Length: 250
Image 1 (cartoon, rainbow, N blue to C red):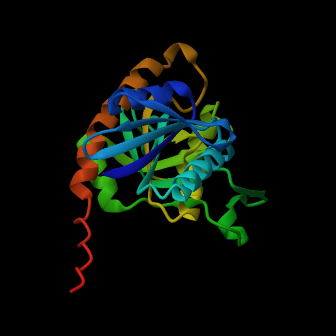
Image 2 (cartoon, one colour):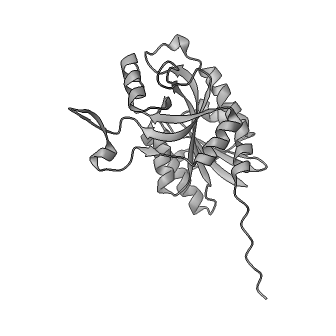
Image 3 (cartoon, rainbow, N blue to C red):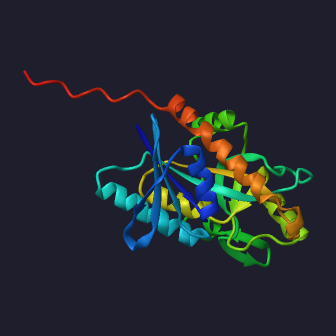
């Protein structure tokens, strides 16, 4: 059975994942975080609502990964999941309301410095990274199973609230489909533990001016449940062969 850690920001997203995974039992982690655990026939999902923003996401993910490793039950995959803002299809790229996106790049949009020549990502300053790239074969399989688009998902610390900012981000990141607030933090923690990562998002609103009347949070959560119903099949199809048992001694 494959063990997968799914990290969301808030309880509503966690519950949408659990609705797809089956009955979820609660398990308390160090520090008081609660996992919701669902064991299917082929894939076991542990679902954690770690909090909003990349710092909370990284801390919660690291706690869950460490606890699993110490228990001798390490995870094979970490998935950052939830809803987010879709860039307008009128931009160079974009994702409509209610659609599903699987990240082929998980990018920290605002990790860097403002300079006289514009924004410089932290990599250009000689520190760290601003992007994680999930396994392309896994991205393709999961996107195909969920009927999702594959593209860049941005992680921001401040949600975009103007058309000018939305245009700036779309131009700076060709192929961007959606922005959210946790994926890069989850990916950083997963990378530190040597565990592969995915990000799956559904679109609840358009990136740009904040128009709450146009938000479709319920539809996006329902789409998230639908996407996770397809995930075990995709993961099973992309799993490698089971390891050979050790030879018996004579």
